[in-house]
Image 1 (cartoon, rainbow, N blue to C red):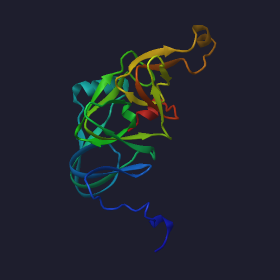
Image 2 (cartoon, helix red, strand yellow):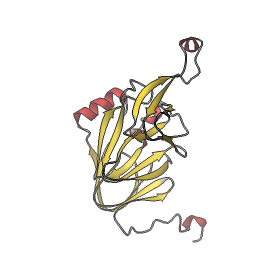
Image 3 (cartoon, helix red, strand yellow):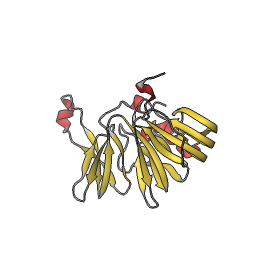
Image 4 (cartoon, rainbow, N blue to C red):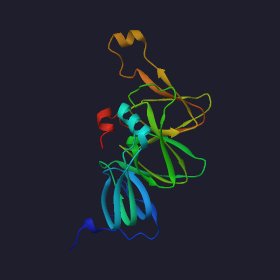
Length: 225
């Protein structure tokens, strides 16, 4: 049988080392040798001896997710084998985190990560109850973090005295050393007249970066599992 379907770029090859790699722009392959964590329902195929179990977030995490809709529904993947992960054909990216790195990510953009990384739902300081949620996922530790994004992400550097303002529905994440607050870019009179649709943004100050996506997903779609 012959077809471009069977070209080398589409064929899944046997993994040579454990861990996370990009299968293609829309999926991540993970060679499991022990344990890793992934978004619930994101596994699209696997081979080998693997078990998939729901991973609890603790009472605090469950309450925060129930109140805000934010959070990260996780499963633990254990054993030896290979698994592929994807979500609604979103673009996938791998972040290599080193000791001392701290990254704040919207839970809807997390696909999978090494078990060596620690994750906690934390309050976005100064953000209040916004469309993007009051809580985000903060990652620390050493390992790889697999992210997904609708469309191609934009990474904007943040410099001292040059704050960046982002739509709360478009933000993917930011370096956690940045200071966050709400910024109102619309006058009260404009709001009364119907508004511009750009009333409030998340302001980031300091030195680091912010990641945004070219999409303002509605909250009900963004938090779907």
